Image (cartoon, rainbow, N blue to C red; front, side, top):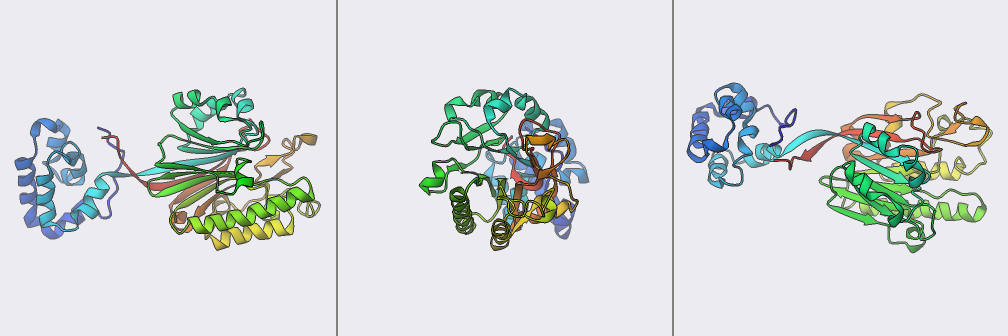
Length: 357
């Protein structure tokens, strides 16, 4: 049985029980009556003898919570809200979820640069990949599995182009590839993984090297905004991670004046990103914690741009309003160099179901 380092309570256990101290003896009588002592560890038995025993009641519940429903019914008869406020949390722990977004500029190329070694050290709970540039049959899924990750990929029809993926230590409840619009789905732009209580999206917004692609990019952006608005009706807890190919503010680009008419920093692109965040109540996780300049996630391969830190902040982890207060930190990781992009990370303290019992 897994014992998490700390347990989540809505109230301290003593606070929970103190108004009903006369019933405590009845509770532990029920313990002795309906629990099989042989199924309880010596630590559990010892814990029953002290106040700490009350604080670790969850520890005792686990061995017999399914096999002794009469015990739970006994408790519930004395405390009507017990299951909701106590047993639910017995099954839950606060877990710091580390989510990374990374445009790898070719997953196969990244693998040759010790991507897996870095992944093992960084150890994100979820990593969102953009520009995988590989079909599902070309990705070393087996190595990811050995590293402890379930991985899911949405590749472009065109070989060696675009593509997104999500790899997670926890198996998602559901994975959705694409958004239902063929022109985008053929390019492998969006993938979503649904977990207990929240969903993660990996998105790769098109770049624009000419006017036709700029029109395609902006149409994708408008459609993606509507997609998220509709999705929030059923999934309000969203983390949207990816390469948006847009710098939001002047602070996010090394030369805002000289690049004002360049795609990626055009006024209409920046305005869209503002509206995207506003209309969907999203927080730019990095800027929530960091207001410093010269913080970038992409550098051109030309003219030693990375060494001189002449970069753009194109990669984001957006967090929906219900999860905003769960964020604990957000970072850009420029020291990681498998790509012309670097990873961006957000950590959140989330209530997770503890199934390792």
